[in-house]
Structure formats: C-alpha cells, structure tokens
Length: 79
Image (cartoon, rainbow, N blue to C red; front, top):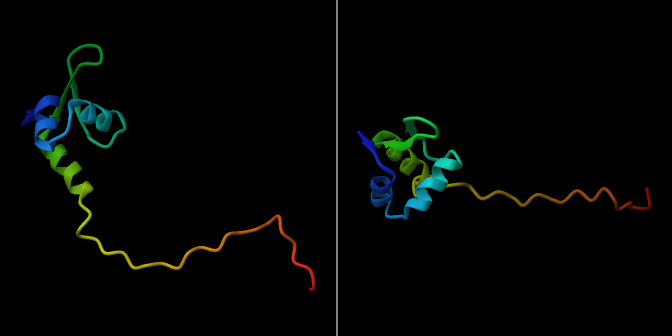
C-alpha cells in the first residue's frame, strides 16, 4: 500500500514538512510517480523500516573509556 505524504505524517504524528525532510535526507525511502519530480508516495513497509531504525530501547551499549586527545603541537621535554 502506498501512502501520501499527509498519510505518512499522520501515522508518524509529525508535520508534512518533517516527512519531506526525511525523504530529502534519504532517511525515508519513497516512490516518485508521474512526470518531473513526480508525486511522492511512501510504501507502508518503508515507513515501518524507518520506524524500526528509530527504535532506541533495544540496544544497550557498553560504556567506553573517553578517547585521549592527540596533542601534536605540544612537545614534552626530558627524554
């Protein structure tokens, strides 16, 4: 099933401009149907894939030690 931008925005509970921005940045796949730039249609499966990519609760990341800055411009004396 193909959704209009308005329908996709309603499902995501965001504005149409957010959907357009997601499409423009390549984060949400779409189909362009028609001549010229075409009319944007979004497959339900693509919308589901985007939503899955936004999920944060499933991954637990181990804390990592902070990286030490490389200070190439500082010379240490004594050696």
